[in-house]
Amino acid sequence: MRTNMSYIRNTGLLLSIAAMFTWLFCACSSDSITDTALEKEKITSAVANDAVNFTHELDSYTPEKDKYNFYFTYKIVHPWWDAVALGMEEAQRQYLDKGITVTYEYMAPEEASAEDQKERLLSVNKGDYDVIGVDVADENTISPMLDEMVDEGYKVMTFSSSDAAEGCKRIAYVGNTHNYQDGADLAEALCKKLDYKGSVAILVGTKDAPCHEDRARGAAETVYKYSDMDITAVEYDNDSIENAYNLTMDILDKNPDLDGIICCNMSNPVGAARAITERGSDAVIVGMDHDKEALQYLNEGVIYCLGVQDCFSIGFDTLQVAVKIADGNLPGELYPEETNEITTIIYQEDAASMLELLYGDIL
Image (cartoon, rainbow, N blue to C red; front, side):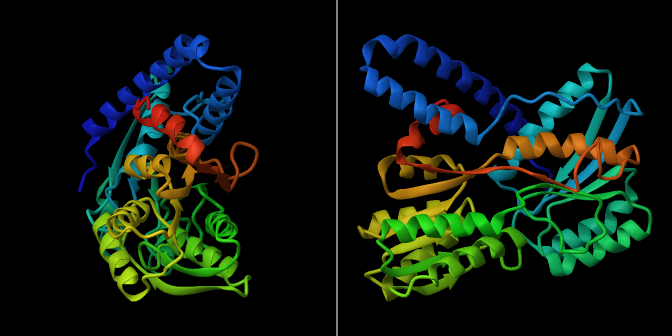
């Protein structure tokens, strides 16, 4: 199914408005707050601004053509990938300012499915694409297909949150190269919050999706370092808020004294927080990304911390690398084999700034 691009464009406008409001708010309110509060506002705003970078310019590379056509397929229609698309649109606009037209398909299923992605890749030869980009749904299923496509002469890259399996012939990857560490960092924050004692559950996401599995593995191996901590449940919610809510309710039924939940995608912190709130549980939630409802729960203290990925930069850099690949350039001086994008752990004191930056909400 095609992503709702009109929604993406409207979101881009909202982000511009949000940035304007951020400036106005800081400029107009500084005289009415104490020096200590002002300093805190500067600190928290800096955390939010460092987590997501909306200021990008194309590098000095001169494309060899004036028209490019790309195909991108990703795991699931979801706001996280809409944010990636915003970065792509900004790069596309800057290329157009230089007289270069970049068009692309940006396609995903309503539910994450390796078989769906496989079918999309099998049919991609019906289009005339300079580069094919893949956010890998299942490295074991998809990586061999990417090898075959490269052998057949297709220029293939991976992007977003999930690279292919190690040794895959894909040309380059742009995205999160440290999902294991993200999971470990979230788990460490949770363990510290619990004084390294207690029982926790892990909500993974989509089975065999590299990013979700790597985060879950990093989280589990971190928890198991501490003798007074244990993992009571590991469940897959398929990147669905509703599934995450139902699974959390089931986990609480079986473990009413649950101490914490580690959430490995953007949807499950929301589902877990809804369930925790409804049950009145004291379980501590840590999770991923920038869902608006999750940030509101963070601001209220229901969620303890979130690992926010810089989706905008992922999208912008993906398009820029794709142009270089299309021109026949291999990784090296012009771009690396892996373009690493950052994840920033944010806490309650950062939530208001992040909501203002991303959604224009002034709390």
